Image (cartoon, rainbow, N blue to C red; front, side, top):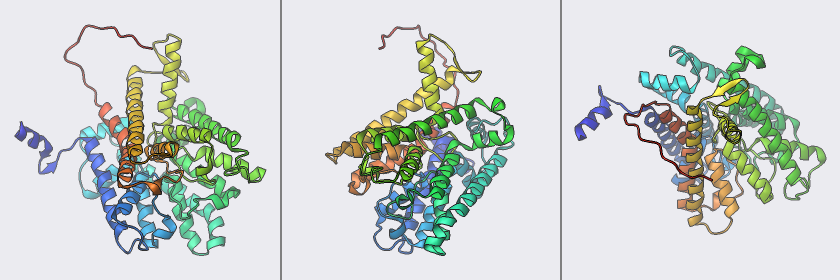
Length: 447
């Protein structure tokens, strides 16, 4: 048995790992290398130890944005460049990054990996996967370039030549839904700036909606011809943005610690920004630590949902929530088939969504339990922190810096699984198997 396992593990002198393990390994390598580089004296100003470097590298590669120190003050220009590179590599997506890394290392992508990748990115041909990766890169670079140009109109007049780098860094961070900022208050000092409040949200909306949806819109350009996935993503995104923005505005309008002290226009801008940013972006223009518990729960919900599949966003994904709601409606209406926009959704998709959601909820609840073991009090802050880590958001109510070593390790693990776990589980679920034995049906009582 042992020699059979070794033969399966190693074939032709190369490790023959399954696709999920290989992709997870890529992320681990990125994190370790990034952490070691950020630990170098060249990368920081002296206040960053090894644990802080690993935490920051994990946060960057998983495009989360949780930090233990002010990124702009604690890291040198070189360190900030490394963080931006890690964000870019991690934000392009698990599959795309893996393909790029394998290609750079000269390791051919086998047929099983190609089949899984084709199904995950909704393609019909195996020959155009490399082209798809290039398209994703082109979309990312174009969006980041346009975003940097607009942001430069704000940062350059205020910070001079350094404003160019700030524009580039925040554009990369925004499009990849990372939430890293070079200012201790994130973007709060520009709470009423129209350029910041439009450019940053549009960047992480485009980055979080999914490359497949962007490509579908570019090719079809008509609502009637869009795929079911694109329609669910667009409608779901619009509903969540309206729900988040209007809800945050109503709940926080008179709160002196958030919107209360702002002018009417600034309140509207801040409500829009804070309603969109929980969808894994992580920037903030108001003090998240001063939010009411109701607004905190609203934000946690949005963070857990996240953005779209094959995007730079995290969470359980918008389409997952849509299928769950459709399945619930179908159950109460005694329907055996799900319908949406003139298309049906099969049982296999429903089972996959249920499995991914169950694993995600167990992960979040377990994370909250583990963090609370060594941190009594501030339960809402800890729950917010774990949800932010799982959704790879980066918003915090101030609990990040108060975590001990165990708490940091838990958050690192949650960030890693939040980015890698759901996708890896999706790869496992994509493998079809036919049961060899059938058992007689049984009855259980539910509800």
